[in-house]
Length: 436
Image (cartoon, rainbow, N blue to C red; front, side, top):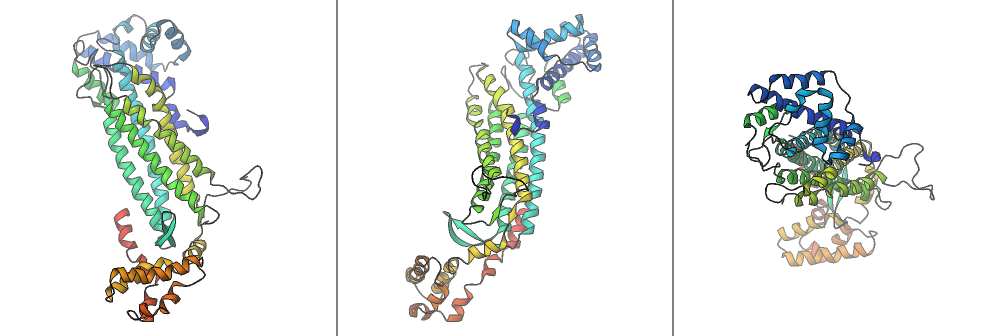
């Protein structure tokens, strides 16, 4: 975790104190249920909760000092709790294994991280929708291969992003549900030394579902899916960021990141206004996606368990969620403050002498009885003249002067095919689909 790219609420989930508090709650709830079952004295859970009610400070340094001797983090924690609670603490962890604590805690942390990420997505979606409605009919050029294609609106570009992040949100909701499972099933998942009702009790208290069948660990296909979804969200962040970066290029300049008073773009060139935020987002997306392959490789553990996944998750759990949280918040700010230039969009639309209307003329010729091959040839030979003139010539005027074209279409019919609004007649339909 890099503090520069971290926000407090998400970072807090992964702090050692927060982890140990979850560990304690799991152990105390399990002890409570074991007391109800008569496996341990009910006084054991009471002693734990009475001490907890004093809101004790989690002494991370003390736990670390014990772990330096035991070389085992869970044992170190249990030892530290016993030193503070007293004799009744010996009934903690009855029939449990370390993975019961570690895996269920990770589930709680990822569940809480998901809640923050879903809120982030809601704010981003709201920002995108506002800009989509603002520019619903703002004409701009659509590009394929980076080359002018046909007219679209900037609102449609935003609607497309809204639909994509809506899908991201749905995927995250599913991934959150899949990751939020509890395993309190003992050494190899057979419940030999602990009753399944303890697992169900702890799961309910912690807001989790019961893991239907665990080995000594929660199956890592769940985690692989979770981090894969984070990777997809990161890719969607990058996709919109790259769009902004291209639109801010000097030769395009149809939109750009907000440039605040006093901001500097370059240490050498005072004129520079660079898309630094969206470039940063492209980099952060790579970091989040970097967690996906390790999560996939964690699925294939040996037999009932090994710990090859453990070190990986200590990195990717905090890093991926903290980074994605920051990236979503940053992208929301970019969208909210994005400077949009409709006049420049119109200027770029007009730049190539009407080439963007070529398809309509092609179709009109075929409907007038010209073969598609001949229609394509007629339109293309005039279009290439406009292309070679860098837009100085007019496709409309060239077509009206082409005898083969005017043999099939009247000048008025040709002119009708250069109506910009024709391309936007279904914008309402698309918006209804996206925002219904």
